[in-house]
Length: 229
Image 1 (cartoon, rainbow, N blue to C red):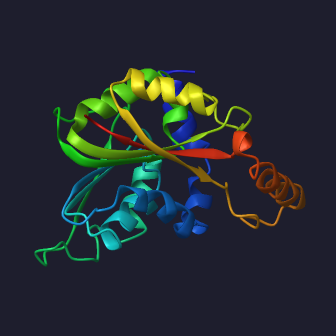
Image 2 (spheres, one colour):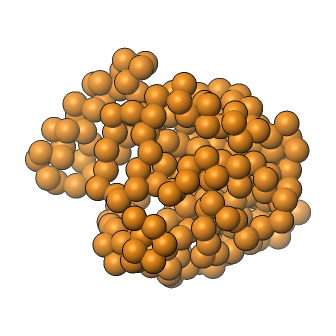
Image 3 (cartoon, rainbow, N blue to C red):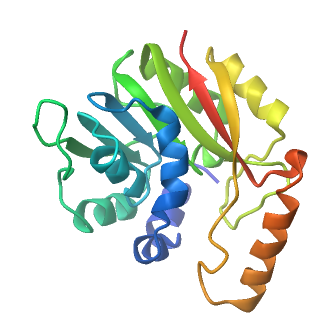
């Protein structure tokens, strides 16, 4: 699935409403804080969805400017209307953090080279039609010395989304380094909250995934911390 059909899926079928109603800020923050220090930086949230991580970076991280980019206009509408247009935390000089919502393609980012100090992407890049191009674009828009975090699934994790790249830790490393980025460290993401919803089979599945994820090779998702040389 590509182009208009893919956009149609995310605009009409994806569960953004659930993302608005049942956020998991502590799970997101565990990954976002790998970008610290954040204060005073410019940040790109790539595949921002309904914008929770973008807002966390503004409110807790005290970034100066945050851009939330997503392919879905439905997601961006939710991002812009479920909270204030600007972050509530002040930047180091006391000014409010600025948040901008942008509709765009992660494989052809609408930004100049070297625009951002920090970049974040949670559960998004694996759904790009061309994952390698997504990492190359991420590297392009980062300044030298900039830090980025991407959270991506292990090889066995499956969702209902129409495009999905799954890989081992070494496979993801090859994609990242092939784009010209250095892997600084890798952390584990334990997966969605066990009681994200009240569906018994889903709850049992999440418990099983938590237990499986205790084995290093079977971590649910990888938190890759990267640097642009």
